[in-house]
Length: 255
Image 1: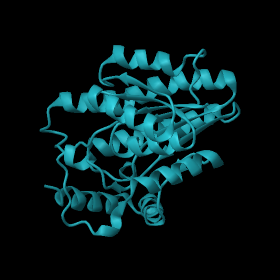
Image 2 (image 1 turned 180 degrees about the vertical axis):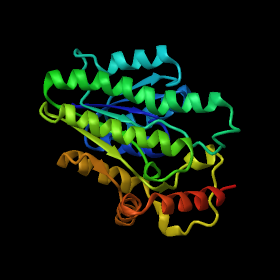
Image 3 (image 1 turned 60 degrees about the horizontal axis):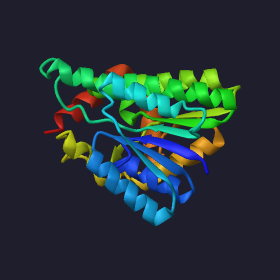
Image 4 (image 1 turned 60 degrees about the vertical axis):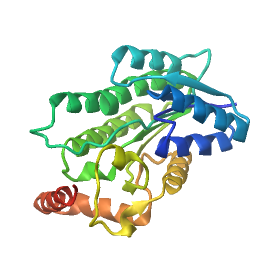
């Protein structure tokens, strides 16, 4: 059976990926800081889908723990066929006033861990000439809503660069740029958006489905849903002055 590693695989989008891949017959390696959540998710997935689920308690802001997970990802004796770098958290605070440690943790979890784990997967997959890497970026990568936009822009460009290096080695790489998702992600980050209309929201199931379809097709960038595809396209062609204006409005709409 193929094996997938998913960071942040116990809740939200990560859990949806885990369920979808288990349904496709993948064995799973789930990584999260939440050991209790890991065990509960693993037990449910084993029961529902009859797959093997390995739990890997990991704080992605701790270098030694990321390197330990990278060893598992790159293990040629227990090959990983798909890596999904999903773990992350919302950044709601000011670039100026928020504690610098919060920004540093965000960079560790959503940039450095992505680089380390993707590198380990890429080396192993390249040697076997097969595999896939999915990195969760965001539609916010094309606007300017603080450090989160900057981080997700890095994820997008890094993933595209990795895809170029692996293009001739049988390894598929996808950067996913979802819009607003109805998960606990925003609640945990204390981000609310009372003024946003319902049409901006996308279901996690749609994101998972379109991501896996993009992976199968070898598509490097995936923007789930037609309305978000249009929004991202518009942001790319609009003048940056207009994007800064929209970004300011979005930032001020949050509590």
